[in-house]
Image (spheres, rainbow, N blue to C red):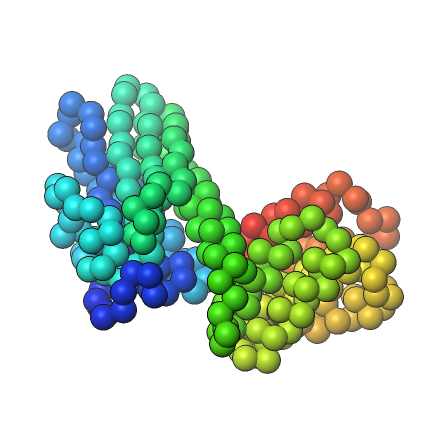
Length: 275
């Protein structure tokens, strides 16, 4: 979700997964490449706006900070966001390098940074690939940070999304009976608050199958229960990534001869994509 409205909410109380992508800087000598930095900024903003429940400041608003040196804490106060994404682009012959970082508007600290290199034989394809890679990495990083935050803060009146974040943080802990019992309880509480949450339905299905993996529930109970959660989610948002991951996991269990290594890979992928 992109937004250009500015609220009166302080950064510390800003929505979870709220962020702004500042204009990326072209650090090369050729000013003709400025358009490429602009395109990457715009595409990354769009990519991150597809994260479920994310609040992403619109490109036009973010663009007002172009060329300005502004403390990210001030940006957080101005826009009521928790995170700032910023970076630079350098094009050298057939290679494109992007440096990106994620900062907290509450502390001013850098929470994540990475370099992304891409060949530019096909410039349009190169731009798409590098934006997709950045978007995926940022999606996982922000969700992990917010999940841990929600788990530690333990608000007295959590919303459905708070509970989903806690469930996700718990599910990412070592796969044990205790962690899966806690995660399932949190997803069920989230569904009591929001029965139409695709994130909670998908997470509950995955967690129920985890419990089957740990031999905590009978096969039929887990398979039928997970299928019901998935069916409900399909009616709401059939192409949601967390739902597709849960469907793949269920299909593995329904097939003869469960492939342990494949399931472990899909478990990791599903956990990373729950938010």
